Structures are given as structure tokens and as C-alpha cells.
Image 1 (cartoon, rainbow, N blue to C red):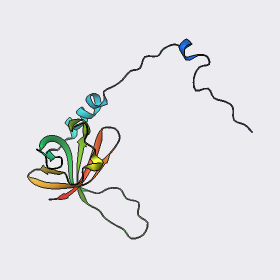
Image 2: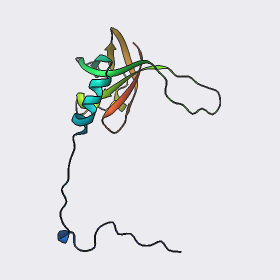
Image 3: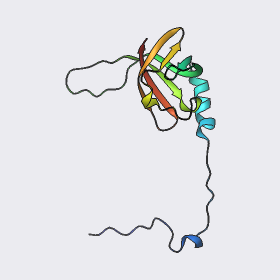
Image 4: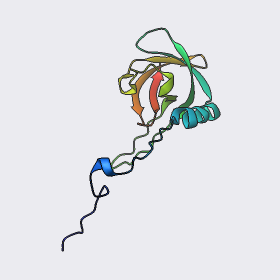
Amino acid sequence: EALPAVRLHAPGNAADRPRRLLIVLDFDALLHAPIMETLANATASYSIGGAQAFDVPAIFDEGYRPLQIVVGPDVNEVAPTLGIRLALFPADFDPRNAKGDTFTVRGVAYTVTNGEPDSHGWAILKATRA
């Protein structure tokens, strides 16, 4: 049995359809900044590729354990993790390329081993002590 046809747009010429107002929201200002202000538990001094370090508020967890679905022997991974707002970093910063960057939190130096953006303006940086 055939499925009924579904129209994605109203019939007729696009020029004849009523125009709709597009509302753009600044999620970083409305959502991310207040969340970071509330949840930040550290200030990280972050250096991209050995450049001059800059301070950013962050959510730091020294004993982060990612959720793992394990088939076979159980593997436990514990890694220091830094949660960051990407809006506070240079526009060309890509957390997937952050391996080797360094940061200091509470006087302890760390080296980034893996960066994972969440596609919504945040990133998780896994690290080891430097």
C-alpha cells in the first residue's frame, strides 16, 4: 500500500506565500553564560599550542569517569576533565585539535589528550597531569 503524499510547503509559488519572521537567539548569552556562571568550579589558565595562556571559567573534574558500555573485560578510565564554553576561545579553536594544549587548574598543570565538542557551544577536554 502506498503512503500518502506529504507537502513540506504550502502549495503555490514561494513569492506568493506569506513571509515569516526568523528569530535568532543568542544561546551563548541566554543559556551558556548563566550556566557556566552557576556551575563553574575552577578558573583554568589555558594555553593553545604553547601560546600565551588566558584565564577561562570552567567545570573541572579530576576524577571523571565516562559512561561505558562494555562487552568483554571491564575497563575503567579515569581522566581529569575540563568543561569549557567555546565562545570564550578564539573563533578558530577546534577542541578536536586540542591534543597537546596545556592548562593549569588550582596550581596543577595538565596536558589535553582528547577534545570533544558537543555541537552546541561546549566542549569536554580530557587530560593527564603534565
